[in-house]
Length: 609
Ligand SMILES: Cc1cc2nc3c(=O)[nH]c(=O)nc-3n(C[C@H](O)[C@H](O)[C@H](O)COP(=O)(O)OP(=O)(O)OC[C@H]3O[C@@H](n4cnc5c(N)ncnc54)[C@H](O)[C@@H]3O)c2cc1C
Image 1 (cartoon, rainbow, N blue to C red):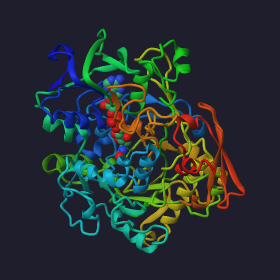
Image 2 (image 1 turned 30 degrees about the horizontal axis):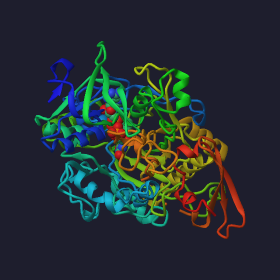
Image 3 (image 1 turned 180 degrees about the vertical axis):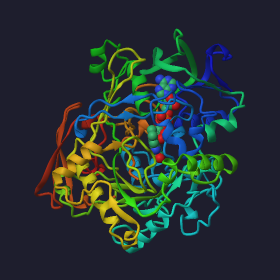
């Protein structure tokens, strides 16, 4: 059952208390309560997703991505890499978490990404092959809303029709879609067509797959909570903001928390008890925030704020990474673009009516038709300076998101009809932090992703924009594209950098603030079984445990590394040596490496050279 007021709960003693009813939290709540002997309480700070039409109708999601009650309404610290701009940092404040308001792009990442997690943690359970059955268990492949023939648009062999969360190809045919496929045929070397980017080998351009079924959003709330809400052993309390973990004790040298403290609006704190385990799933921002307010984090930082230190884990809140994006658009010689709806009230109302009546029409999706994954040129000069941070040769540095126009309109959106290519840097070297601003757990933490503070990251975005321009040179665009909205073709490299730093944003994929590492690693927050290091009966299950953001590839074959220096917490220098290990190609300084996983796996493997 879902409760609004703590007084309505039958009690506050459960086997498991799950902190955060978001993307991950509700999945684990469902799995645990399959066992009728387990009782589970989910504490969610936000509101219900029920009846929130903007969360159900895919096309309307943008309405949720503005300051409102469905949002934590965070802002990053000023970002030096973005010319000191602060960005809104979107985090859902509702059941289902970010799966209730994200852009529903369904990409699993590459085989390399998961194999790197396995290697980093020493746990083969994280490898692609071992995770793959869980993709299938999660995914319920569903026909698109328009029931079009999907032959040649995906590979059925890597999908499942028996999972929990409906996934589908686009259910509305924007005319730009087939043209994008033609462009891949005309420029096959640069933009090969990929039948299915969710096969573990995402390189190329393929048809978008979305967490949408029957024209409606699939979220953890719709797929993992709603069908099971009548389970007697599953209780969800809304408007319950967890402030800290309390009642600490020690058993066998391990820290155990006896309770979870939370508040409801205007209330004094309550404490829920977990007989078996406390499971943190408050997300990449929320989870480290709760840990630090509970005395788990860097002793130095906690002491400075007067928070009693219970467990010195310096990696808490460190090592965060994210995907940074910047887009280009072109006016087009067609009226069948997203603007035909977003800039026309009558058409908008008709589309709304059509969705309401039949769950068909343009509202069943976002107008993103394809996604592309590309690698930098292996001979690119940037690899003289930086080791390749991608997870391997099947992994992209660049993601491209192709849309049938502007999905959002603002006063600055030009009027007319457009095609958009969003480019995303998906293998960042920049690393940032989530830290506390005060000792009050109700104060928002400081979110500092340090976007574009590595020259590698800005290089990737420069390259990505050039690729986007290359894409529109395919003959298929001759009678379609009229002109770019911003012509960057003659920009100098410095001008291009300025364009990026002034316009780049985030696509809200922050990870790493409670990263997993091998049990023996001198950094990390959780072990590969997701139990917190140095604690018992406390686990973390959300995106904060991913030590490196999955990209959705690698030229470093010829590079070897050696570490110099490095005491815990110090910065260290990584030398890049040539294949014969006789010549230093470059050096990079990695700050806090002892608390972070290496940017590239191989340095650790061959550290001893
Ligand atoms: C706008 C946007 C677009 C995105 N687009 C995509 C996409 O297209 N495809 C994709 O794969 N990924 C996308 N992502 C990323 C993806 O949605 C997230 O990485 C993922 O949902 C994170 O899941 P999580 O379980 O870690 O955290 P969340 O889903 O954020 O869950 C955390 C939950 O904990 C709750 N919580 C936090 N603090 C507390 C507290 N103190 N007490 C109680 N409850 C608390 C929150 O309210 C929330 O419900 C997008 C994200 C955003 C924001």
